[in-house]
Each structure stands twice: as C-alpha cells, then as structure tokens.
Image 1: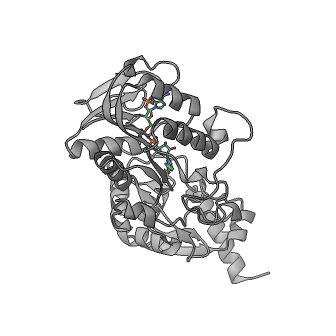
Image 2: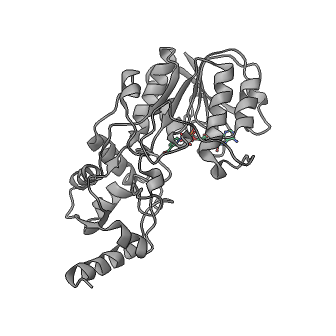
Image 3: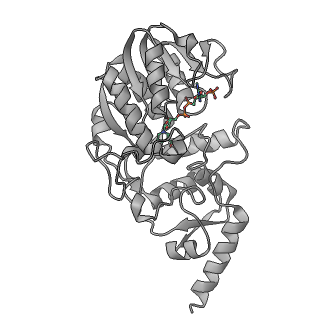
Length: 327
Ligand SMILES: NC(=O)c1ccc[n+]([C@@H]2O[C@H](COP(=O)([O-])OP(=O)(O)OC[C@H]3O[C@@H](n4cnc5c(N)ncnc54)[C@H](OP(=O)(O)O)[C@@H]3O)[C@@H](O)[C@H]2O)c1
C-alpha cells in the first residue's frame, strides 16, 4: 500500500513508519522537516506546514493516510481539502476527548465540548480533538479513530513513563505514591503503530479507546524494579503527604493521578480494541526496551516529566521521620 503519514518523526508517527515499512508498504512523510529531518533517508518526504503550506500534498492520492499530528480542527480540515483520492483514513485522537474522566470512559461516553474558541491546542486538547475527529468522520465516515491512553516506549519525548524504568535503574530508595492497587494502564507505541497499519490493510473503521490491559501501579513499579535489576527499594508514601510536600501529580511524579477528576483515565476497558485487532506486548518488554533506549545514547538526558532526585530523597527523609515519630 502507498501510505502517507502526516508527521512521522517524533514518537508514535515514527513507529507507524517502522511498522509500515516492516510490512512492505511504501511510505511517504509530510512534515516541516524540523523534527529529525534525516530520519528514514530512503522514503519520500514531502515538506510543508499543516498551517498554510500544503502545496506538496496537492492532488496526491494514497491508499491510506495516518494523521498522527492533527490537533487543530482548521488544520485537519485544510489537510483533507488538499489531498487527492484516499482509500483509508486514520486519525489519532486521545482518551482526553471525554467530558468526564473521573470514571473509566467507554467509547460512547459523552465528549468534551469547546467552551471558548481557540487554536492553541494545549488550552483545550481534548475538546479540539473531538472537533478534529468530527471533521475527519464527515469526509471519511469509515475512518479509523484510535483514542490512545498514555502512549509509552522508546522515543517517548515526555518522560511520563520512562521516568520509572530509569529511576529503578538508578537504585536506592524510590518514592512511590500510595495506594499500590491503583489502576494503571499504558499502551506501547509500537503496539498501537502496528494496529494502525493493520487497520489500514484491513480497512478497519470505527472509534476505539486504544489502551492496554488495566493493571496496578504496584505491578508496573515492581516490573520496572525487576527489569532494572538494581538494589532499588520501593517506599510507598501517602498522597496527602506528597501534596503537602509540594509534589505534583502526573508530570512531576509520573503515573500518579490522584485527583478525583482523572481517577478513571488509566482504567478504560481495552476489550473493544482487542476485539478489533489490537495486540499488546508484555509490560516487561516495554520496560526493558524503554530502559535500553535511555541507555543507548539516542535518548535525551532530561525529560519534561519526572521528579528531581534530590527532592525525592528529601521528601523520603521527611516521610521517614514522620513514620518514626508520628505527631
Ligand atoms: N503521547 C501520548 O501519551 C498520547 C496520548 C494520547 C494521544 N496522543 C496523540 O498521539 C499523537 C502523537 O503523535 P507524535 O507526536 O508521537 O507523532 P509523530 O508523527 O511522531 O510526530 C509529530 C510530527 O508532526 C510533525 N509536525 C508538527 N507540526 C507540524 C506542522 N505544522 N506541519 C506539518 N508537520 C508537523 C513533526 O515534524 P516537524 O516538526 O518536522 O514538522 C513530527 O514529524 C498526537 O496526535 C497526540 O495527540 C498522544
């Protein structure tokens, strides 16, 4: 198949390209050439900008398009206007489209509605993705629309999962937020990418929460610990204590979502996606490969997400004192 990837060089998109090439497809990329322009030297690269410079796409036909970079409705619409005949369309959305994530969303849960017009996607990420999805479905009623939860694995630029394998690899006392049995869920970017390519091959349509199995925080952290194989020692700390110490959820302490608003975000039922062909690899493999990537020299040395080591140890010292001599 001739597959166009809109994006393709940062994280999920590059895994889509890898998966498509592995399965013998002919891949074309469209992007600005700012993110890793030398990646994939042997495939066709169309240069342009989704905002105002779509000439390179004009009238081009493809058997399948995979949009990993669409976040702004106008740009999604203009890209669709520019393209020629397309056989199958995938739009990568997000689990953040749901109006209420305090309980696990299903594919038919109510969607978030944009309150104030904006094109700044960070201001209304889920709401804008809802509008993007709708634009895609208007033109391609049989579009494939995966709504991923937390995407993890090698090349993740955020550190929102990578923090844990690397933290355990460093050893010593590791701060973990209670309670251990909290639902936790990730999707390996490579599993999602392979599903996207198979969806194009099989003309799969429909909207799915693209999530892996629900497990516990303890299982994820214990897996990171055993894969790292160090002397790391998990220290479970009370969430109220962490808040009082100024530790923030999610971006500072990854995988920690204590806020009632987000309690269902890492607990979505993966059965519809699994029934539609998603295959997920064992967590051990994701952890091992993520750790190997961070040790390969290809990964950044710092990520946007993650708890500073000195702060972690200071919080643990204070926690230990409060446990030893309760007030
Ligand atoms: N990470 C998560 O946990 C998570 C969870 C749920 C959903 N998602 C969704 O999954 C997708 C993740 O995508 P990714 O960033 O990993 O995809 P990617 O396709 O690997 O990287 C983004 C690509 O978009 C290109 N790009 C950016 N701005 C552009 C523009 N104005 N015009 C043309 N190309 C442009 C970039 O290249 P240039 O910079 O060279 O242009 C880059 O190739 C997103 O849609 C996100 O909303 C992510």
